[in-house]
Length: 426
Ligand code: UD1
Image (cartoon, rainbow, N blue to C red; front, side, top):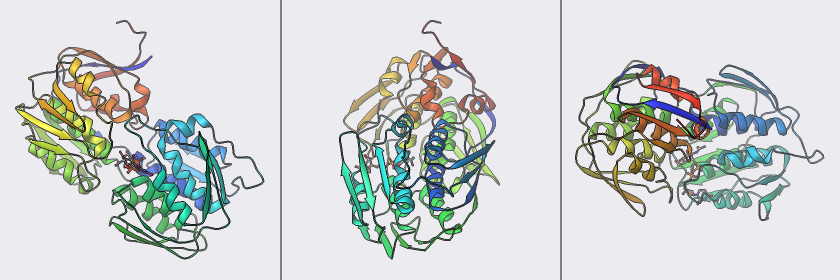
């Protein structure tokens, strides 16, 4: 079994470079489908979600060349009505971002037959907002048990008012609107930095999008887009994970390229736990003395609030802070999978609906832990890094969906950890 072994207890010291953003690059890769030509994507993280997205795009007849962190994608000969589309179902089902292909493909080919997307086991994660919005833009969608067929004779601009904030639905509607006839407005749009990155990419390719980063996005449909070269911004969630590692273990670290301006809520949360966070010339410095304070209450929210993707990493740090506090999850209804694992390590946590109460203890104890999803899995590696003794985190592949090389990064920061193949016995 794929796993990570960690010998816990080191204080952190050192520097690591933050990889390109997973949540930015996935919709940008989908957006290249809107461009009839070759795009170059730089600073692309080498993670399994990107691998799956590229595999899906190859199945749509894209030509892909990859050299390190740079990808060149030729989308000049996509499959059309007359060619079968065989998107590999394991890649569709392994990650939710496969749904990003829908808006772009409809714009380009007018017909998409696909299975429902998968993703982390963190709640229901339906796609009703995506489908409702696309129907408003002239798409006929026939749903079946395991997927749907979506067809359009031409996308038309529409006014959308999302009933609640959805990052993915905002992105899909932007993708569908860029080449649609007329204007599209998205009210109550998500404001995440990844939406800004997608819209930057599209505007550089000739799209006319205004208001990205605000809750009202206006997209004026254009005839066509042109080829573009784009550099993916650094990953604020990966940076936040390593910041949380410093909260867990104590020490002093520098996160090169961390996107400080996107991390305000995270830095405020870290400061409330006693960390000193400084914006450097090209990154973030974190100094964390031995005793962490317990934040009275942390609560996830859509951007610019505290990100749900860092909930488990901060919860892990809270288990070793002084005092009592709570963490409330407001985005996903089932995102406290790691509570049981942390309890195995001695953490004092009580989980009630969407809130957990934590009573800090001096130190977690190493154990054999099971990752069940991406961010929770990374948080367990942090738990092992701070714990007494050694830990094994099973199911490394969940973590590799979003972290290029978490072991190397954490080693750069002073953690003793390595990947291993594990037979279930130590
Ligand atoms: C994206 C991020 C993910 C992050 C999440 C919230 C990517 C690849 N993933 O996921 O890392 O945790 O934003 O910041 O960017 N919902 C519906 N119907 C819909 C769409 C969403 O009910 O049609 C619900 C979801 O179940 C969830 C909430 O809306 O409870 C927010 O989901 P959404 O913002 O869409 O998350 P994703 O785009 O899937």
